[in-house]
Image 1 (cartoon, rainbow, N blue to C red):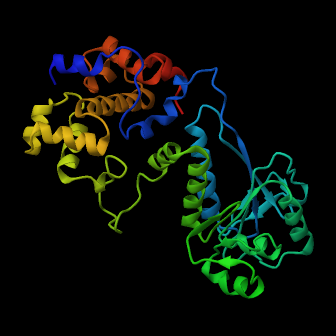
Image 2 (image 1 turned 30 degrees about the vertical axis):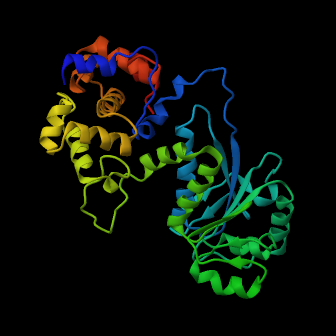
Image 3 (image 1 turned 180 degrees about the vertical axis):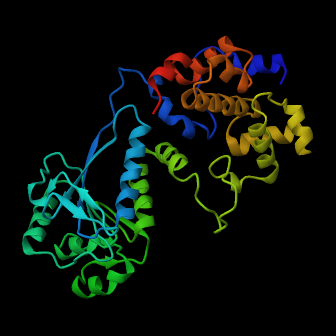
Length: 358
């Protein structure tokens, strides 16, 4: 890439924002760009009630989404605690005991936003009356109430799903349909109906929580979570298919994917747009149209964002000198790299290295 082209692309005055999908990869590192005068986001409190033999995968899938959401925010978006029906720990379906923060009967609902009952394939679905009464008492508060796996079964028995749609693990469907006819049972992986949420299994627990986070905090936060947690998602059950360079890139036109791969493979010595057009066997004008339509930015700008993202990873994941990071990512030197890094992330590379390693 010529010096003139770099100058036009990279030396704009003022702070820059990521225009392309790469902003999702960098969300956790953009917190310093936010003004201290801005109001912090609302931090919602979630209580997970773990039944004996609860599904560990469903529970950790739900928790993983909210922990990752917190990583992407300058202040925690969620706080969570785990509760048992009785005792200081609960045995999971994997035979692992999980320590809890307290028992259901002692749960303080004064600032609770969400209550989720997590069941499992072998969980007991005939709870004692005090458990059902406690769930009913908690429901008097303004809460979102939900179930993972067959946790909805207990909620339905407590009368908390009457008039609501929900889902449950297929093995528990017959019993729920027979015992709770006022519940609208749907054969879907997860269901959100007003202030009631439910998922039928381990995989859908994460999808349900992502849907809730999207409703509460928007699509960008969810895209950032997916960028971190779904990088190895297997498409079309082909286990040896390479992981995509960019989330959703498999759906992009072949020519654009070829250009993205060329950019990814030429970070240290960036190719000019004419070179990319030559190797991809399309015109420069076609490249511009492809990037504007699918990447919502220009080719040069995307290339810069790709390089600064690579630089951020090297900076925070290795002990390489800053000058070496700059050169490895196609910058002319440490001063040039430092200006660009500060423009995007709001801090110098040296300060980022000392304060932002996750």
